[in-house]
Amino acid sequence: MDSNKPADSLIEYPCDFPIKIMGPTHEAFAQTMVEVIVLHDPEFHAGKMEMRPSSKGAYIGLTVTVRATSREQLDNLYRALSAHPMVKVVL
Image (tube, rainbow, N blue to C red; front, side, top):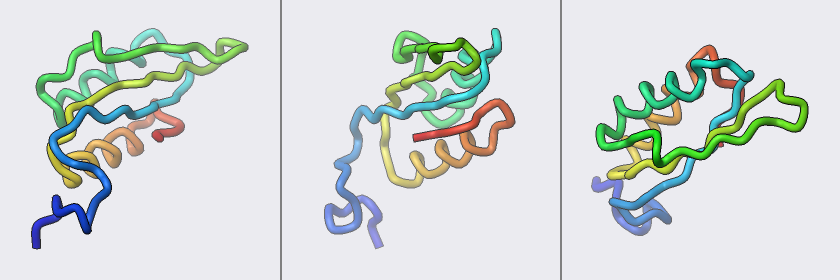
């Protein structure tokens, strides 16, 4: 069964797909997240990332835009990010 058929997904692949990642403020957070993302999207670079600190500065939010090629790729990326000890939330 082809998991990329329109009946199985509302997303048409390939596409640019935004992901929000939140975690405690740490000097290596953004670079660490880039390293995780590149494992799943080798063409990703830090220029495709926006950083936003929380109002009190305790957390940082990243919005990254990956090149999604399949549901499997996105699922694997979400699992890798969610499992990372520095990450609190992935949306």
